Amino acid sequence: MDKKNIAKFSAESLVVAGGHDPMGVLNSLKNPIFQTSTFVFNTAEEGKAFFNKYSSADTLEERNSSLIYTRLNHPNLTAAEFRLAQLDGAEDAAFFESGMAAISTTIMTFCKAGDLILMSSPLYGGTDTFIKRTLNQFDVAYIEFDTNHSLEEIKATILNHPRAKRLKMIYVETPANPTLSLTDIGMIADLREDLRSSDIQAVIAVDNTYLGPIFQKPLAQGADLNLYSATKYIGGHSDVIAGACSGKEDLIQGIKGLRTTLGCMASPFTSWLVTRSLETVSLRMEKQASNAEQLANFLKNHPMVNKVYFLGHLEEGDPQHAIYKKQQNSAGAMMAFEVNGGEKAAFTFLNSLELVKLAVSLGSTETLASHPYTMSSSNMNEEDRIKNNITESLVRISVGIENPNDLISDFDQALNQM
Ligand SMILES: *Cc1c(COP(=O)(O)O)cnc(C)c1O
Image 1 (cartoon, rainbow, N blue to C red):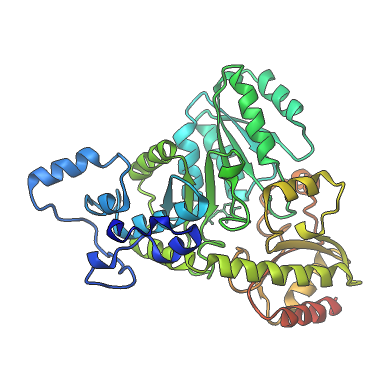
Image 2 (image 1 turned 120 degrees about the vertical axis):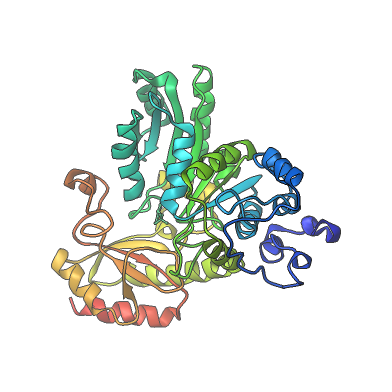
């Protein structure tokens, strides 16, 4: 690959052409699936050398010419990681067998017994459970903040905590599921700088599942690590569970080390699927966002809809609007709305959809509708659900790539059944 020097091209081109050298595999244009558990060393000396350099970061060619064992590294993993790093403008990336594997491995790389983690609220249910219940068993404490807290308030909460000096990670999800509340990543980066003067060194990780890798670049806003459920927009076809993390090389090296020990790397087939999907992620997301805007505008004026949560509808003067303008370049394709009525009305609507499917998950080619109160957020206590505007009337939509007029007419007929 270096022979052709394609590195000079843009991320948009490298995500299609990069990550694979046809000359290495019988001139195969596309990377085959390397369905093997291990790789043969030509000599014992070579095996020794591969183990010696395994943990150091190398170029794509070097990584692919020092393969050992599929849990450590394999060519499909290398290809996926090359492409994601390109798109995120990151030094390196790591793929996992699920979003939760990426998130839990990343947090455990930096948080040990006795440490403290600061998290935005609300978080994806699985992450919330991991931090509050699982990590708790390993003596990692947490503190939460939400969009209503200022930098000064968050800082005071940290400094008042008995473990303030042991704050090792600031974990942010923006936009947050399902009502799309935003956290200012730049403000979090300022907070981290501030804390340095109190001798507190924390890594900033952002779950960018809702907007990445096209509409939001947390690394450019001051985050150290960019996390994904690649099951969503990166995979984009509801046919694979995967996760990823991108960021600074030294941090990703530490995460890959723990990934090898835990054994949660993305398999050859998973890696192959996300490598294929990364070629079209920008096309899909642009179309999904355009469909979402049309659908949100339609819902806003529908008599059976009380309130629409869509980032493109934030109004000037709203502090959330300022964050939106600063850190993302699209409103994305996720929305939620309150139907006029309670659970019964919401269920009538959901059961009446014809084109749109009733399922959790998001970011795929097909439009999906769900009921957070009884589904993805049902494990949250009542008080937290209400605090986060997750009511019985709320319906969540992930907009796909269908014809927008078909989507609007399907929503219209289902709303009119209520
Ligand atoms: C789905 C999701 C996850 C978890 O990812 P899996 O691939 O299901 O393990 C984490 N964060 C967000 C925001 C998600 O939507």
